[in-house]
Length: 127
Picture 1 (spheres, rainbow, N blue to C red):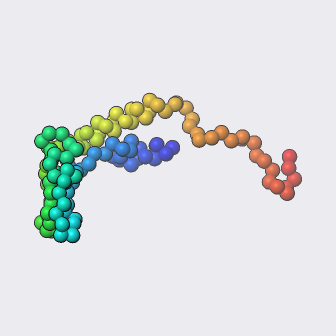
Picture 2: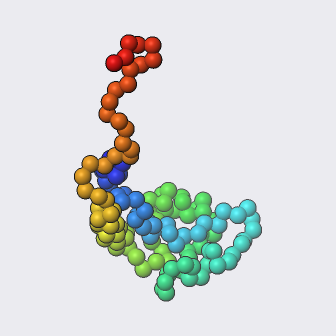
Picture 3: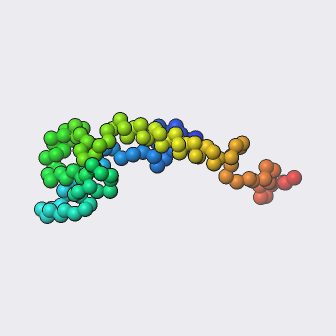
């Protein structure tokens, strides 16, 4: 039943397949208080493949104002478009859903098996 409930949450079933939003995955905001700390965590190629790199935002407040609260923030540092990410999510969702369905036994599913006979309540005249 829980899986059935998750399946109604679209497009996040099965869980764990949503890709990062390319508008934000490669962006590093300088949130330091005056210090300029740079390193492999916010410059260069990063953990992605060739042609992808970090985009460093020196002044996050100005950036948010310029992009109208990130609404107009365009993907930078990545070769993936939002449409490509959506297609990948659909592909992974179909694959994962197939894996889950093939691993789920057919028939009724239940967590435990309790006896189906009723017990008399304490203090009552039982059977």
